Amino acid sequence: MQLTVKRSALAGFFILVILVMIKLKIGTLVSISLIVQSDIVDGDGCRSTDNYLNRRFFLLQNNTSSYGVYENGGEETDAKESSNQISHPGRTRRVVQEYDMEDFVWCLDSLSLKRKRRPIHIAFIGDSTVRQHFISFQRWVPDYDRKIGSQSTVFAQYPFHEDRNLTSQVLDNLIVSFYWRNLIKEDLIADFKRWASTSDHNHAPDFILLGITAHHIVPNNVTKGLQEYETLFVENVLPFVNRSLTLHPQQKIVWLLQNPTMEYAGPSADRKVRLINPEKIVQYNSVIRRIFKGTRVVIWDAVGVLVEEYLRACFLSKFHRKDKSWYANCQDFIHPGYRALSISTQHIINHICNEY
Image (cartoon, rainbow, N blue to C red):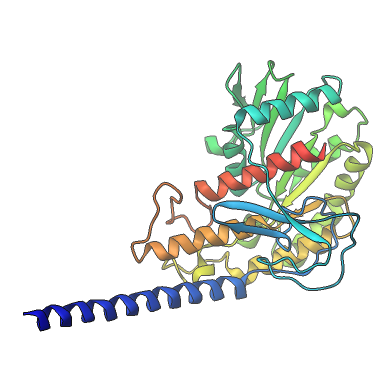
């Protein structure tokens, strides 16, 4: 009897060891797949004052965001670093501040006071991936007298393709806008042309989150490929972007790089062949880096780290390791879940509150 019990215990121990080894192996495979296919670069040449927006200096660990900063006036070197380790001399790690709703109200009030109570306008411009950030951002704006309504001037085929405005008189006439701009065409060009044609700061957004890539990767009636995408942006949008930034020194523009999709976990990870695939995403993101090199536009690529972790969770959920309170909607191949968005919103708030 005792011998049987010992044999059973020993067998159970070996099974446990094997399961642990399999888990570690799976985790390693997933990590390698994601890192190899991601568009990590050593530098993009764009303005990057907020190191939590730059994946070279950003670290996500144990549900805490942190980033490397220089102390005592240190200067950046050419040393390479991974997205998980700070190797530059003189850099120390700081935690990204986590704002709650009350903190954000204090931030907005402080900014408004500095601006002599001039209304703050925050604009989200782009496709559905940017709209996600707009919707998540709303959760940090308290509902004192908050109003959300359509501001579309043309017919929208779907309600979620409407331009939207969130306003609050109590918060010194705060405006948070979403502009549905899924393609580089007349409406987007008109927006920046309008903002680049006035020196009145009240008629231009103070902060802009911009991202228009996904719908250009798939067949559309505006561009037929990567070269046309770059030419169209450089000739018709970039001059107005630069002029708007010149006329409005307080204006900040952040470009949201196209996030990884479910295929980063492996070819056809969601059992479908997608036109928006890792190879094309890297190509289009590289063009964006080249377009904005030397400008005041900030490239936000640290969000890719959050999305990659989200994709890992989705991949591991196939092995029944799903945390339902953190990740959701893994069937959506291009839109990350709530937790990734929530941390991303903290980055946006930090950028707004620390930069102005």
